[in-house]
Image 1 (cartoon, rainbow over the protein chains, first blue to last red):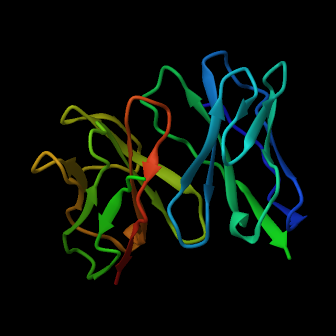
Image 2: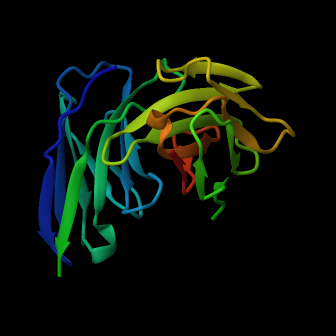
Length: 111
Length: 112
């Protein structure tokens, strides 16, 4: 499984945009880029996913580099409820959809 | 929005005992997964299950582990003879036709 690299932690102020980076230089053409998050003491929660094009949903936006070797999760206006560990995961389209997790980025939101 | 539920929320057991963790998936979801997370560590894939068969399993999922859908709705994870190192949060997840996996709140297992 292709690996991802994320910063261990990031801080942001409440009500400001947050850009969470992810490097995946060994990504293959069949890998989907997934983002999940885990709030304290909760199960993981799906955020967004994409393959080649940028994606938007009600939670966030996903910006994918043209060469697909990196991506950025964008929270447009972070709230205290967005404090969580954010995981960038590559899912091989040929796999059985199991998710292989890294350490993620712990996002700290300052009021 | 439909939710995945898991029972029990907490379980304490003695080493060597059998435990069964239960998951009620979202209706009409056909793909099922178990993951675990040892305290302070990353989430680890255990097993995927589809059409009443295991489709993929990790090295962690050894002969002590088994999964089934005993009544066509609940999805269970059984650990036959628990070890201290089985202490972890266990998450059930399921998926419909799309990419998204929906996770339950987890069961915290403590083996003494």
